[in-house]
Length: 468
Image (cartoon, rainbow, N blue to C red; front, side):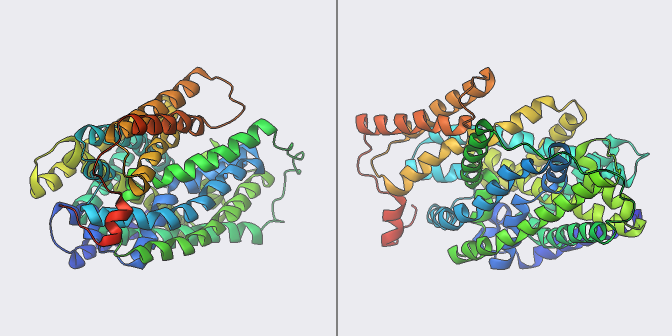
């Protein structure tokens, strides 16, 4: 099992090294977003790598195992809605990034609105969003690696995973992540099809559990939460810092559109993962925690050498997202939080930030993780507050930076206050409610202090203007 696992990991390192051959330039933008030169195929695999991580492979069947089929309603809707949102909005983000020579979301807001204050606000919001993501990935990786080596120290195992993620980043930046994402996707889909296929083929063997009672229909309160959460999270996904990184890496807008046309095909994994969770329920398999249900079922059904390959695939699912998040937070810290580092200073600084971020995430994963789990709940309704500012940049030339700043701050305060106080708002996602004062503040300050002589992104793209 360990031998087959190691072979796959070595293959991923070989792909990372191979990715350096086609690297266009050695400046910071080449490191962070591959100089915007990734073709349609790599953009496709990288975009899917951002969507489907270790949380999808372990968390989704774990939720079905613990809460029944109703758990899948909002998850299906959210993942499905991402594709059309990126299909329509992604090309405009990519074109704006090319217009201003951006590598981060903060680059765009700073250069379009000509505001250092707005750059810092967006950077702070983006970094806060990224902090819990690493912890969540390491918590998932700990489950996987403890299945591989149950007698080893958990801290040692996830530290090894962190070192591997650092190497992916240091070798070739985003290009390495894109190349490894190809291997990760093949193994991820292959593993899910394999485990679910074996489970279906042997369904009648060892059937011990009785069918559970029918799941109660979803209450109106829960339905409101599911629908509004689908809207907030699909829109929020488009504003995640790592999403902007992959959009800036695309060679063309068409490459982004093509990737999103094919992306929903990956949703075949969810009914297959439901089969795995249901198999465990009906065949007396009892994982220590619900998130282990996929690995517990795979361990019961597969030979050891094949299980090693499956575990490697799940591990890569976490490491690909982890590497892109490291690049996003590294670029934000060295380009936007701190200025004047130069091209070499940015790439070196990003590697230092990556190492520190990985150490922080490992330490957090080794603690209770309760704080990070809470932070993970607010990621989307926090980052979605930057969406009105993007819309204003695209369409409304009079919007000043102060209006965008006030809108983001107002939206975040309202959404966080609702979440922290536990106020019953009828099941509506706090992020959606936060957008109301956000937009109101943006409109009011635009009317009071309109920006003079500015042009929208669409104006500049329309006449071929370039950033100065």
